[in-house]
Length: 107
Image (cartoon, rainbow, N blue to C red; front, side, top):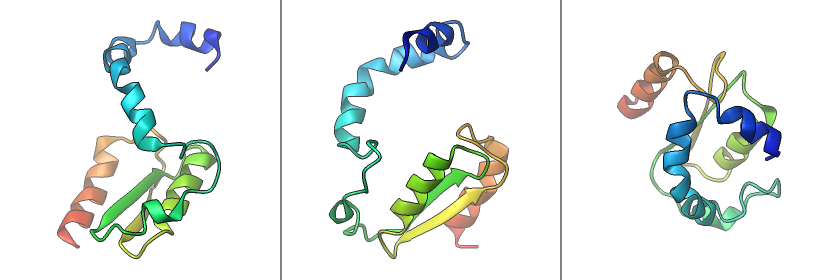
C-alpha cells in the first residue's frame, strides 16, 4: 500500500482498531497462503469442505471481491453464494442480518 494512503488512514477513527489488530497480520497471511495474489484459487484446498458455507459479497463492492466470492463458491456443492444488494465491503449489519438469518435457519 502506498505511503500516502497509509498516512491518510492514520487520521481516520478506525486507525486505532486497525493498529491493535496489526499483530495478527502474519497469521492472516499464513491462513490466506497466497490466495490474494490474483491467481486462480487452489481447488484442492476447499473441495473437501462438507458443511454449509455462506460466501457473501456486496453487490456494490469492488469487482475483484465479487469475482473472488464467485470463484470460491464454485469450488464445492456446500457453498451458497449471496450478493448483498447495494452493499460494498463495509456491509451494513441491517442488510446482512436477514441474509444470515435465512442461511442459518434454512428459510
